[in-house]
Image (tube, helix red, strand yellow):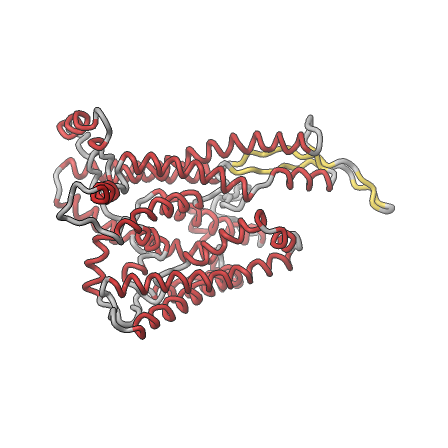
Length: 473
């Protein structure tokens, strides 16, 4: 702890680093201030009633990444979600468009062009999303349904708010510490933790012994998951790369030995976001067309009833959720890490893997290693997303075919296991997605501060000779 507090003191003793940290904190404060400014014309009472019906839909996922701003329809209601969507689309575009791939290969100039295209795409996506949000608000009488002015004000206000949030994120990245967009999401999630602590503390003080045991178990699982996330996000599979001696003009460069580090979880939290969004879409669509209560035996009533239960804790939901995480992990990593391109770059620069011929054999070797790492990474992501969800929402075994009713009766009657079908009943952001974001962003930011301290000959958070590796290596 002495080294930690010493590092904190060193952070503020360096003028440039102190300025960057204060600048970051100032912009985060502006972001949180904007979350308390509601969009014009919102009926707050009606809005709160609607959230009881749509919290498990795509709107609930959107609320998570807006830091709770969407729940109140503040001026920052959409948060950074349109920017994240635009960034993901631009990451996939080089595979689909040779023109974008050519721009990507132009180095720093190409990166700036793609960033500019990402901003333009963010505005387009945000305009479309805000129109649908305004339409949803109008149809549910949260704003005046007979006024096009109210609808237009929502579109303009939310679009402008999202563009401002995007600008805040870029300013933090350029002039502050850490990745700005990630820190904005981080701040939105962290702001809900104090109320969660108060809620849990209140239940412990008012509850019986089993409540206290349950909280201790919950905290122990959370600490174990955080430790797992830190370990896996820091892990690297290093592939030894050798460079042959080469002569340039009158100079001879001796061969070098280096390594190509591959992360276990190269996809980060993106596969979980994809899976959550895809699963929330059917619920969003179904909720817009409620079944006729007077005809409970119709086909649509049965479909509607099934999807009303298709959310966290439902065995069918969890099975599809885990499957989608695995599928999207492989899909996304295949897009962002092209083994053929890596193999060609090594060959062009005279690099090779010992015992592996350059070209196609190197690509095949890298693909084998990448497949193994991705398999482990997909299982890890599925576990981290699934475990907290079961603790909070339970696992409704009664929905299982054949043995569901008997298993549910057994668990409900067994002390210490009765929480499994219903969950532990704590309602706060302790989901796997939130944990991945919180820990990943914290590691990334601390690693950047650590690098700044070491570069200026100060001892970092972990002492001399140690380095905390963030998500970027």
